Amino acid sequence: MNGTHGPGTALAGSPASTGSPGDGSAPGYLAGRTLPLMVEVVRQFKRRRTLVMFGLLLALPWILVIAFKVGAGSGQPGNTLRISDLATEGGLNFAAFALSVSASFLLVVAVALFCGDTVASEASWSSLRYLLAAPIPRDRLLRQKLIVAMGYSAAAVICLPLMALLAGTLAFGWNDVRVPGTGETIAALEVLPRFGVVILYALISQFVVAALAFLLSAGTDSPLGAVGGAVGLVIVSSILQAVEALGSLREFLPTFWNTAWLDALAPQPDYSGMLKGVAVSITYSAILIAFAFRRFRRKDVVS
Image (cartoon, rainbow, N blue to C red; front, top):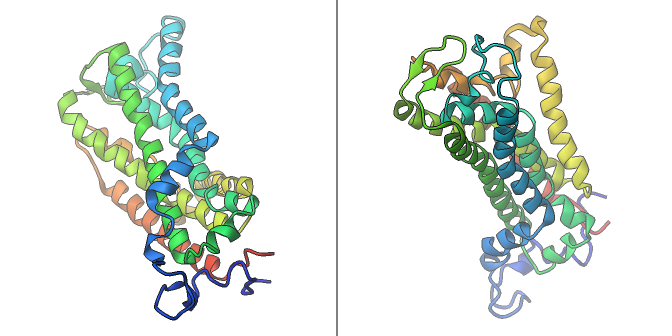
């Protein structure tokens, strides 16, 4: 029953875990030194799912390069101006294409995996109760795991477009950027700082996925359930986004502004959509993370 604590959890977050003289804790114990970040970073890095996911993210741009090279000349005449049609125009065009095709699913799965598996996997292995019995205060354990999970999520979101920029430049050259839709050309050096803003926005837009996955992870011992629940949020939000009858209510959906970064690559960049997307993402994620801490404080890790 929630709110009950067995012998294995009495030390975690209780007065006996403060390390004050005479409180019954071990000599030299300091709650602030439990579960150092580097320990958690190394633990998560050694997980097979971490290595597999980063391997996939780093390999995807090169797979796309091979696909474009193999399929060169086999498509329709190139008079359309979709982002996929302009992918081979240069490194920045290719990186923008790679980000557009991966942000809606692959990056969602990566972020959900890192944030949804971090606590739930400990519970499924029955090691969570022993971590808390170290004793590690509950808030500290959750905070350390959140920081590391968000760090790996950020690395995942950043590494793919950077690798795509490298792969695209080597394969298709460093050329000026052609804008999808209009075909206008912008100097590559002018677009490069904007592309940095695009990557940052892509990361912030994944905060909702990360926060929901973390909330589910803090309340379940099923990593697959936590990851699947966060991915399901994106799927449901994308479906509702297509319902035009919702009108302006769609702007409050967590995925509505995910493609607003395309406006930053226009000849006259427009950041208004990105600002709204940042506001929506940060608001949702702050609420979800607050619920995660509240839920974990009351969680019975013994039953």
